[in-house]
Length: 473
Image (cartoon, rainbow, N blue to C red; front, side):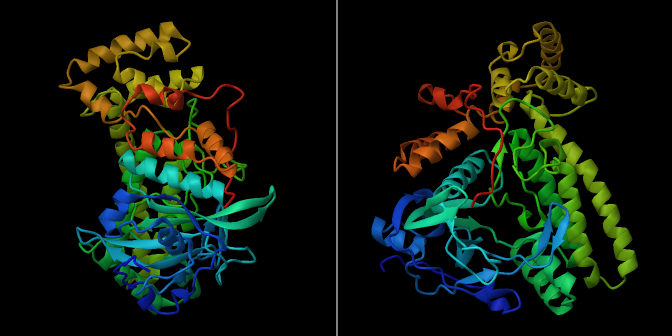
């Protein structure tokens, strides 16, 4: 093996209470689909031959220094607590330090059974692997905190799902860490206070060294999530499954299952096929992240010297989060209409535009991109109402220094459209990866309206609309 990776294994050193030693299953015929050269260079993991790269990131061989583990956690799933989850189809190979000294997990997703698989096969089929690769890299290019994709490898094995036998694949995911709200919950629920404190100390040292104690961690995570969720909403992103086990302590977007970007704007839009009551709808995401932070607070209470006082203090912190989320949402959407500093009346101006978009079913991305270039009148049906809004908007922008520059930084031309993702997956299952590579290239420059990407920026026709998305891993 010519690929040398300077692995460290600090999470594995926490001990057996936190994870289980677990090597990935060996695939029968690993073949490289994609390798993220730019990310690899940042991490000090240069590309080797396709054969060696596929063997390493498909799980056929372990690099020297890797101590692979599957991590333990629990979590609330759609509001119901599951006492033990964990990495049921993922293996953490180890950690590396980038050129700036930041620590990153290198994880194989879809690499086979672990002690936490709960009867599953631990595998992933090709579709979800390609979806996560494309969407996570698109989110990075949009400037939104996210896990990232280093490699995608086909395994040569079939994975059996409801659709029958599907081609298997493994994603190499890079994260600041894989510590989740559910990681804290499992030790709190079990009354393992020593391990809970050990996790607190480790997490503070790794992610928030400026913070102190449980209160400092809670506030740091609240702050990170307060920045993250409005950023999602600013590009029309719906996570789809914001369970506490999918809520990462470092404030990155993680676990791209039934996620989607809206086409026609609808504040109540749900894509996830299993979200039958709209718990994780677009407009519910701020409330849900507050709920998740309340679960983190509950898990941290046992570490406080006065638990009654801690409950009162933590409750106040969660309630204050609502104001922070609202302010950050307003800042994000103000920038989308060219306003750099909010003043009275601006939130109403934003709300009126969104209301018009909702009633007309206007395309979210294209409407705001059209505003960047002067007018969105071609994106809405009610021209009279729009022109009235447009006149008041233009009057407001007279007080802005460079509103077009503000909008150019906030309004992408291209997003991972759901229908294009489905077309990409269908083609890839047939052995054609051209659209996968084309999407990755175009989405790496999301604010550029290049002529050759016109078809990728087009909203779906009625026949192309994707009404629901699936976990499907």
